[in-house]
Image 1 (cartoon, rainbow, N blue to C red):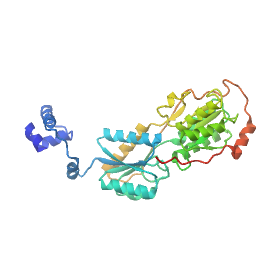
Image 2: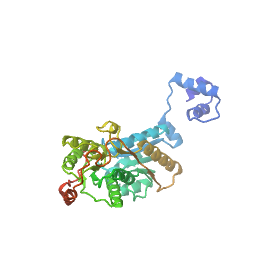
Image 3: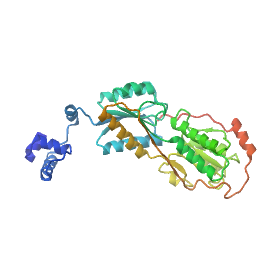
Image 4: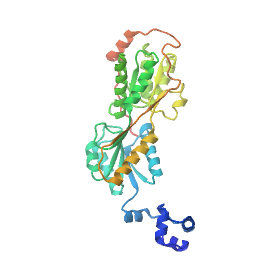
Length: 357
């Protein structure tokens, strides 16, 4: 900075004000300083700045080691928001979201002098580890347990599942089958709850649950079962990947979508509009999740006060061509006896955990 000041003919303090974006510097002076920075190839020493200011402008991000769309899209949304706010992000990925692993990751990030931590916690939140660390470093949880005491940002999964199920019921389908995600995932539990609530409110029969593991393969297996059930005219899959496998199975079994079976997914992945047919699904605004969680964490960093604020972001149903009115093509009557037979468990399969990546 001294070299820059000498070349620009200004004081060390003026260079500092230009670098930190402060007002009160004349435009001609600012241009001289920026030209000197460019000529000298000067880059601020972030470590030195952190020692002087006591702020590293670095945030920690802890997430599950996975290629699943939801956690990855959330991570990218947070990183983009941090970059726009002038923060760096240090990412720690974990094989499993359990208290010892989370505590180790938080300790490692604390040693890097991060100012705060965002935890993407799609599984049951390790509240003990978080609560103890939250007293030392501000922590915000994304998609954490709804009963936790830590500040959190989440998408309303229950409302999204209700919207998907109510959409299918509004098209005249007597009930809606559900291909669920793994039981230990919070989103899967909440989407299951929203599906059940919508059926209960409509007085519709609740068919047997089919378990999946978020993969297209598990959706394909569920679809092979559903294709043999005449009553299965509407299906809500807990994510778009499973919906993709479901569509393939129905096609191979000669069940036309949406003429005979309507299908709705969840997530609105970028490819959903290009499925055959284009998939009706529930959109989650991961960029908004990133912005809100980053803003909440920065607020905690600056205020240095504990908080239990919980921000809930509404999802949006995106209607495409995979859902249609029941009987719009075939007009075949329902066979309620088959539905009762499935309820007794012939279509149930055990949820599977996603494979480690």
